[in-house]
Image (cartoon, rainbow, N blue to C red; front, side, top):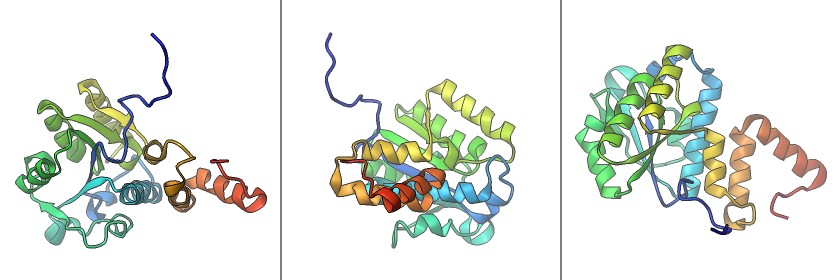
Length: 216
């Protein structure tokens, strides 16, 4: 056995998966207590803008948008101008025919999901997709629930079933993966500066004070 300078097959890349962002809506966020609302919106925005920038196949879906839950966060829809949102009545996204039609149209076996709430709107489709042979990742810090307990037990249940957890910043950096990829370098660091919290502040400082660049 010998090592090679190649990425592992379990790492995600821009072309190998579909991102499904589920129910990032006002009514759902009101009762979300496991994560601060500002942090949740920043993390969701980071994921959305990274996916849009890298050209990731993305499905945006809402539940009862007009009658109960309200619009999807503008931080997400701004990243995908003109993209249709698939509105549902089902709590389990995987039971909605229009969503499944889009999953099948895109045709990718690897799925990445995030949304509100973890224990219902994420557990439902992830376990359903796993049951049908899909490979599923969940961006844990771009999900939230009515309590820490609800979120953590939902994550435990999914991981035990085979879901692979990750975080929002990890997701973006895994798409970039090499700072020498100059075609997406400015985009990645720009998204980090805007939505990346303390990491983004560090980039702003390093570039402003020293003209630093990770790729050189």
